[in-house]
Amino acid sequence: MSRIDRDTWRAPPLPEASDARSQRGVLHGSRLFEQPEHRVLAAQIRDFTQADAQPLNVEIGVDRGYRLLAHARRWPDERWLGLEIRRTVAAAAEGAPDNALVVRADARAVFATLLVDDSLDRVDILFPSPSDDPRHLLLTPTFVALLRARLRPAGRVHLASDLPGMAELIATRFAAWRSVPEPPSGPVLSRREVACEREGLRVWRSTFVSP
Figure 1: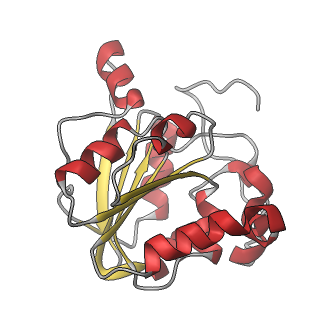
Figure 2: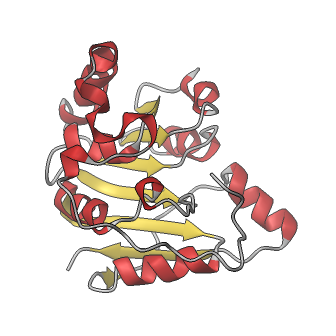
């Protein structure tokens, strides 16, 4: 990926919408879990997300998982699934409490093939990566439609970004959704949130429920 200018980046035009199960992208896109070597991970995610009546929350972009694991320990009666495409996620997977599962996977593949409708109480999307390649963008209309389907009727999606262009994209993608108060969070911040505070960068935050 070419270097992104944080102040001038804007989302590139998207190709025609495709079926959610055939999206291309990082980590083999939405066909990842059809590959034999990933069936164990797929079964692990399905068991964690479908076998319990406790509230189910997903954090996309957990990095090293500091925030997610703190939430899991703070709210032990809820389940917390962390998704991250970078290898930094390996550190978060070690020592996670029983109510947390942190995996290296493309959120699009997980949402398209492993999660079921009306199953999620909360989705946190933290600092989604910008790209000049539309195949690598998370917040496509196809993915937003998946979000809407997988969330429970009162389920919330919370988004954060320090990029003006990403804030504009979020406002566009969720224009039809209803804005609501931010969900509760503990005192532990993600690495990117800490960096933004240190560097004095503005962070745009928004929380929505589906219309």
